[in-house]
Amino acid sequence: MITIRRSAERGHANLGWIDSYYTFSFAGYHDEAHMGFRALRVINDDRIAPGRGFGAHAHRDMEIITYVLEGSIAHRDSMGEVHTIGRGTAQVMSAGTGVIHSEFNGSDQLPGHFLQIWIEPAFEDVEPSYQQISCGPEEKRGRLQLLARPREGAATDAAGKEVASIQQNAFVYASELGSGERVVHTAAPGRHAWVQVARGNMLLNGEALAEGDGAAVNDEHTLTLTGGTGGVEFLLFDLA
Image 1 (cartoon, rainbow, N blue to C red):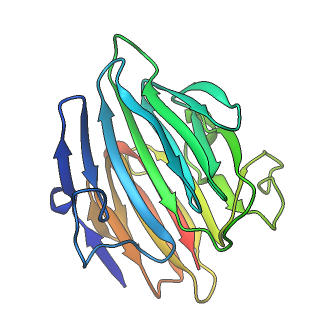
Image 2: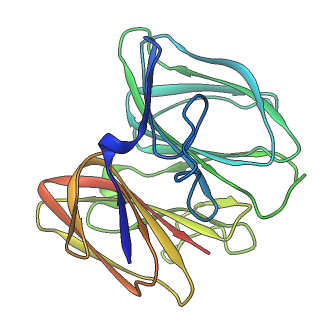
Image 3: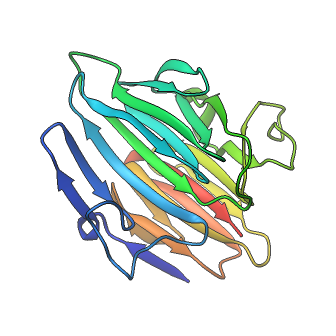
């Protein structure tokens, strides 16, 4: 069964310096029908003005993934990690027992566009950690590129490429498909999936998804994902 969460149905907040759409309840947007899906708790589609961002603030017991769509993001945290990352890099932070960080648009001239994702951890009070994973267009074109996987598994994908490790039984993939190009994902028995369209449009088992749409997938063994007119960039979450 596929249940579609349309882009226009999401929560929305525009504070001037940040324009955000919330797939699930977040901050001032509360919707009992959309509190998350499985361990997936937050997907925020953020557009941030040049030179603006979030000052130092704390997190704990959450797996936080920042996926850059346009521009760059400057990160600084209490673990001593200081980085500016652009398109082609995903940032993964396990907040664990607690971490303080700030996130700003890495440019004083250009706007930034990011997806911020929170996944609830399977284990609390772990040591915080920070990781960066490359995911350039050439790596995810025409295929599902693994970005993150459970920490107890290998820290690489099937091809030996390094991936991030998270404190949850979840696999996170990114892909870019041209018009008519397709990939197939096979879900193990009892697994679930969420597909989030970052840009463009696509078909998911024949169901049309547009930019900003998300889809919860239950009891579907095979997922066929096909790029629509103009192509698509999307994330796929394989969840327990």
